[in-house]
Amino acid sequence: MEPDDVSADAERVMQVLVDGGVALIYLDVAYAVLGRSEASVRRIYAAKGRSFSRPTGIVGCLPMHDEVHVMDARGREIVRAVTVRHGLPLSVIAPFRRDHPFLGNLDPFVLDNANKDGTLNLLINAGRLRDAIARLSWARGVPLVGSSANVSLTGSKYRVEDIEPPILDAADIVIDYGESRYANPQGRSSTMIDFRDFSVVREGVCFEPIRDVLRGEFGVELRKRD
Image (cartoon, rainbow, N blue to C red; front, side, top):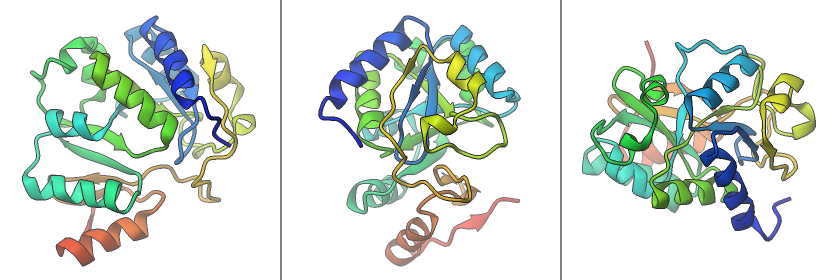
């Protein structure tokens, strides 16, 4: 259960990350590990046993999405419909402004690792703590990246007690708010959609209502990725 001092926890997490550390935090979709320095990202990948061919996501919020992602007005309207009007979590994948000053504050290694074929993945509306951290990140010009808090290919984790020891050992701070809101037996995390062609990169939590919003309100049929 979330405490009343989410903002204080967000500040604690930000300080650890600014200092080059690793944070393990609650998200509505699943627990995640965050970093921002090359050393912290390498520590996360080593703990997860994750290949660097698989990118991190940017800790995102709507104002960041508006300025950093390159997307037409219709695409932005869809993102708002899903995340604001319907209150659903969504990982938005789209081309980005590499020259944006915000991204200029991210270590080149970390930015290159987050870049997948000229796109960045911004997870939006993933819970009060994650949103508070994203707002601090944007306001202070301190970009952050994240990945799921699990050993690679073992499925998302929804309780701290289920997270593997290597992941816990890599974290300098752990924020435990109990079981994630969207915990599920399939081990799914966020739904990822590539807005270049509305292809589904990952069919995650809330996929069906997200699909229905795009279909019913915008006439967009999501397509399976080739």
